[in-house]
Image (cartoon, rainbow, N blue to C red; front, top):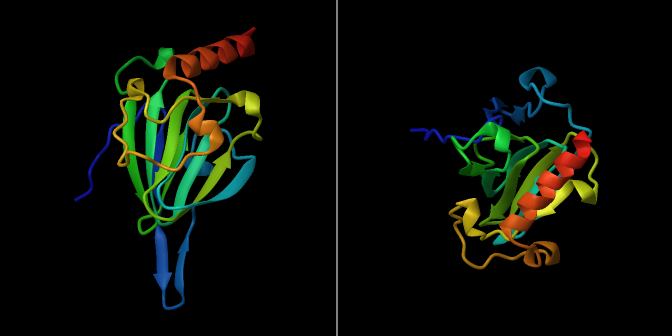
Length: 181
């Protein structure tokens, strides 16, 4: 039985079709026609150690495209876009490389990735990474309403030293306002 998870507006989770034969498997992970979003400009392979958490961060401008191609990953999502209302602000997804899926995360949706085991993710972005487009908060900020399956994950220095939720939200809103001026 597949559990249906309500996602923030414009976040898309696409089940990918795998074609197995006696040689192995082939899976298309991205086709432009599948998505009504900007095309990826950059692809990155990210190898994660067990108990590693990346984020939580949010982008002002770019979309992320994420596929767990090895291991297992929990993705926490929290919508910071005031124009999208408050219908569904937070969600926690489990991605597993045994069932390939592509997750699209639009700008304004904060996200973090937790690897309970070693994992490999393929991460695309609709724009090249620039630090000014990346705003962070602590992974365990209560305002995120995310039930992470960990209590003491391994964090980068940036994530460990991240400010609070209010700081991330204010930075995102200021950057969005500056972009429209």
